[in-house]
Length: 601
Image (cartoon, rainbow, N blue to C red; front, side, top):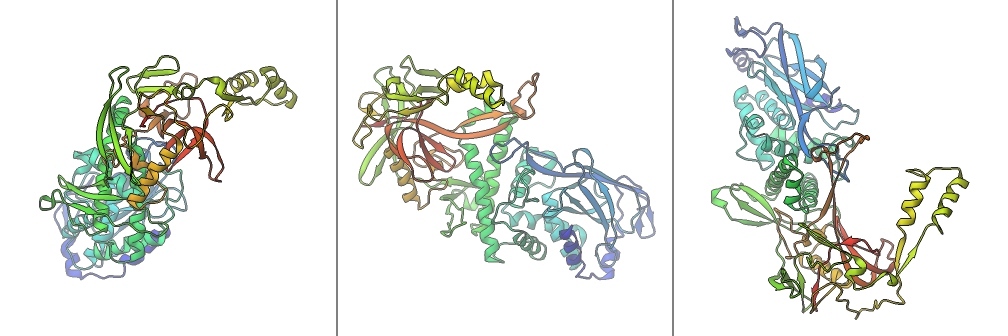
């Protein structure tokens, strides 16, 4: 509650003329849940009920590695709401408050309350002693049947209270505060009743604001506090919003931290969108809606960056304008290589385009046509398939509507004789005997564990039988004139991206993906794999994608056998597969079923 005390001291520092306050408290309005009768110059504010809901956006069950759908829900049950009356002469908060506990779905109610003036400040504080700040709302209890509290009303309340204490009428202060709070974050044209009239837009807006103004440092909440965004910066932002209606260009450290945290949120969305839209559509209406929510969030974050970089408002006059977003070079600057593009009244983020040329080829074996992409790397042109191979070569390949996956051995034109299979135990019986001797039971039971362990040996390429030199080429399952890319081909492609965009390892791999709405920077058009998992499963549990958690894995491809660095310590070994996703290329050995991309000889 430290922030609550700071807020009360801050707003009590400015006095307001009695005449203005006298007029403000004599408006003839009805009271939510109470009587509309007038008593002298005041409305009847005796024994009234003040009720409402405190709302937040959250990813259902999200824990960082996996993420659920974004929804608007009530603050956690057990959150505390505190109502402060405003002094009719100074608009200062009263020294005492009325406190209640939030119930189901964020609902709260103050029963049988008697007020001297209809203007109140209500704070809602989430559970936990380390909550960074409470949500709040500055309200006229006569204006609505239900009072709404969320992150936007908190920003409005900070500014509106400062304005009324400075002499602005209550109605004008509320209107001005809302417009300024939204504009401070690059948001324009947001309807006053958006929460009711456009729930998708409201969800995206609230989630975007919460993403850059997290309320807790703990990961048990939907959004945790990343390291650049310290409480001191949060307090600077809130103070600036209250006093100026804006927070940018006040403090260089604050500006930098704001750009950093927005950019981190954008990177999370880039990962999400590396999975194709069709995948979310297959998961059902709830996930299709989630996809649309996050598309809108990208535009909200683009607006925030446009505000941070003084790109101006995206309106008809600026339609089609492209603004190159500045990027820092110091450690901690997360700004990727984006352009801000003004389209249809909203700023959009687009990956910078790298020079490449698109083409096509046809596989003579089955007549399948493929898009291709050619890039010039250090004066050498390389042409890649811009789609996964779809050739059904029989044994070792599995094809469906999503494409084909190949056994790594078959894809490279090898067989099991080229691998060394290493088992944890000499035999199934040896595994069972080991666990009995240990007087212990592994997960799943001894028999089941030993059966699965013996069926999944560690696989290693036999380098005495496979050409793994730098000049080796493996056509494998690729068409004539094409071959499997080797580790050096992938490393060279990623290095090309990093050099051209002047970015480090980081999330540079994401420029190899086709990521709506950011684009397909280098034409490779990779798409990530995903899975849906469920928590709390029981034997009679029936999985429903709408209740699941999404994990994005990136994508794996077969490579021609060759040497590559396979761990962070620089250990080099022979590999035959590459994982592209998250933040890097990772090479490994194996004989699993994965896709193939071919490169032209």
